[in-house]
Image 1 (spheres, rainbow, N blue to C red):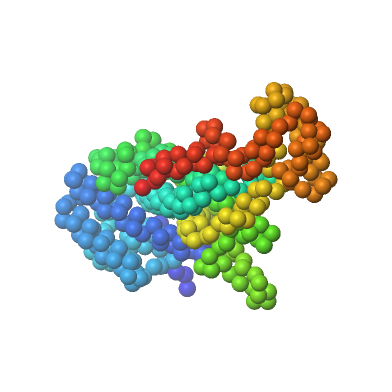
Image 2 (image 1 turned 90 degrees about the horizontal axis):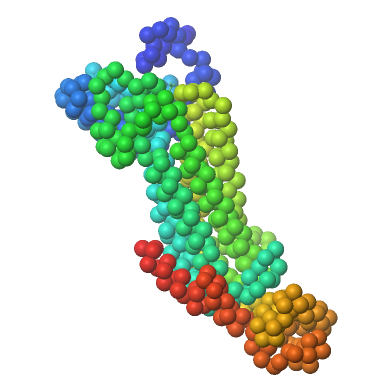
Length: 462
Ligand code: ARG
């Protein structure tokens, strides 16, 4: 027995689709998430159709009430989703027809699923930009809390993961506040660019009905209607910009996560994760595993994967709409969900972790971290050219290494054996506290700089 032809376009079809055709064609399994946006778009469209006299006020009112019923059925889980009806647009419209009858058939006047899906998805992605912004704000607050608690705590700064120079904990935390601020501005830029309305572009060419696109754009919170109907139904770069911003943000999260993994290890012991954010091992009782940090570190994989996937889907597609574009949603949903989860988890972890001030300082004091301070002292106090100072310092580091001690533990005569001009006050700059306190250049690690930056961020982050 052949299935009956589709009620939406069955006019020229004698039979329904093959079961596998239906399976590959349907998006309702995931695009049901767009129901609120789909209904908002339909409400705006119906109100506009009535305001322009394209449909009657009575029909518009029936549509409006029917759509509200559909929305509440979806919210309460009572909505009969059907794969045969392919996607959210046709599911909603078919149910509307059951609820209100004939007026439902007028809703699709001067519209196509092509502009409909473009509207729905844009609204959804726009909302994700707002959610990302909010989540990033919370994460910045958590980092700022850490920065404030340890504005002047000394820790090793690394390059190549080798001890480089002492820095402050507050400074390190603020580095991430900066990165996440740029992520926020990327989402904000993407949002501003995507905030134009495709509604009324219909299938691709616009419509002969006297529609008011400004009215629907305004009703949906868009800045204006998109200017080219072909572009409007073919464009998915708004989703790509979201995914690109999400990828960069996930990359930042992954770097912080990696630091937390390293820092919480027994070898470093810079931070202790709270019990809430640690897991144990079923076999090794001593373990406190930073699973959440590891998973956040890994999330970039699927988020950047979604970015690459959609870029690849869109590449080479002729204008305008092609069904390929239905593949835009599933991975974007997944990427957004996982980004929000990673942001929330990172915020919780950062807020709850405890930095170990003593271990940070002990680590900062080892590894000849003040060698640059010594070289700078030789330049400043003895007038050596920096290259010569570098050489003298290198010899002193080698001497300390030979004796398995740190630079401040060398005696004055050890130092003078390498350069006879060295005076006892050199020891002032070999202490890590003095080292960080001296780095007062703008953006530098000195506690005075860090505190000034914290004060500015507190103003910005509300
Ligand atoms: N489910 C479709 C999508 O997500 C909606 C648009 C369908 N348009 C069409 N001409 N078949 O892209």
